[in-house]
Length: 489
Image (spheres, one colour):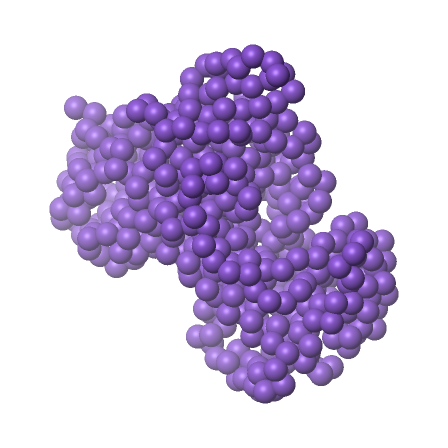
């Protein structure tokens, strides 16, 4: 084996070049942090895998140089509907999402990764492929990671490491971090293929039956992603899942006549619901599938990982250049874990309800779904949940102990507000002289913008409310800035 060599120290090493790792490298490099991103695979995966890009992700990526291209390439599902026994039970009104992106954007993960990689290259960072982590060791100054590739092995000294290396994370295992949870009992198949039939091209269609469900996601131009329960093992355990297997599953549940053909990709799987108990182990931070896995129902997973990194990256950048106190990094786990736990719980409940083969449960869901979805409150909550717009950090992390309505919650991107954010610092919207003076004492920490109403509003780079107050009342502003950030004086 070639001799072990030492690489130049790096502030941040990102392990894994899926959407989570690419987002981390994109954000960090954009914020001026020197970063390396490595992946064990020799080339990007051509498979579509994750498909849905939710409204919250589009909001965050649009102002970071990627969202507009995603919108151009993706197919917009503007509605969802439940069917059973040959009839439409109820709609899920996605247009109720409180966002200008009130739809689910269907875009193959391979395309999302390509767009992120191209933007990363424009920022001067290239993914280093064919490098595998073999060990990691905590040091007083960060972490020491050994990488092995075709040219031999090298040791990288990094101040921080981001583990975005998937559900079988080498870093997580090397550090002995548990990944507790469970595997759900049923078998499923996924497939991307063409469908000749009267399926809506702009709607997610979910068909319920006594033996499970078939969910159909429109990808555009007659292509669809199918997720189906396989209770009787129609898709044999041996060999690939063929179009004929998918056709039989489809025909057993869906009342719409259709011919399935030209399959690009398929997979059989069982659902795991797992997450780490803390998103940090010393200098190593976990995100994406390395930190949490759950049912693909609702298309939430990839978005969760991207939003993990949007939360973490600005904090790392501000700590590295001395604008923030190191304690700020602890808010990553404090804020994201409740969001992760809630999402895993909801997707598991939804999967169990949709997948139940109990006749009583099937009858109950057919009767109750139309009644529940006839309520405006339920429709609003469902739309916000699908778009990940209701996820927030109220009473945890930076918002813990901070008074005021809406603190820790998402600030809507209305009237171009996100275009005014300083994505590398906090942004204070105010016409109040007292608040502006507090901000001026924190040069590089707070950017001041014209007010949007009475009083002041302090917004984080990831679009969440850090604090707010009335004119002349700057106590909360002083407290938040003193708690987490350093003074430039």
